[in-house]
Length: 128
Image (cartoon, rainbow, N blue to C red):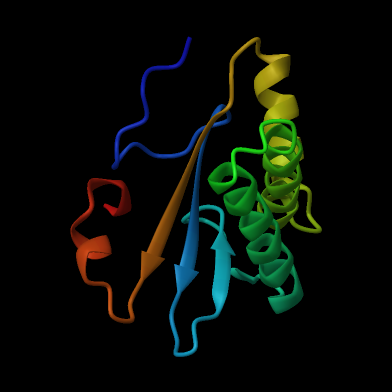
């Protein structure tokens, strides 16, 4: 089994570090898979809006204790997030297949990084 992934551990075939970057006002979200990848990929605003709407559905179901709706809303939000991280290159899908082929779990770390008004986020251990 893979060791825990610390903040400065590089990506390998079964350890993937993905940065979600916000670099402007209003923020644009970019997905950057690794240091060797030349450019980050812009997340389409419609995808972010879909995720935001689904997270609101989830929040409402949890707040109103609609226990039968919560798993459905969680799954839907997870599928949208998966699609955002996977992208048209299907990077997440390919990484998972490689890890499964090696009999290892995929250690996926998603870090929110920002250069604009970072505040407490810049000091959080997960962003280093």
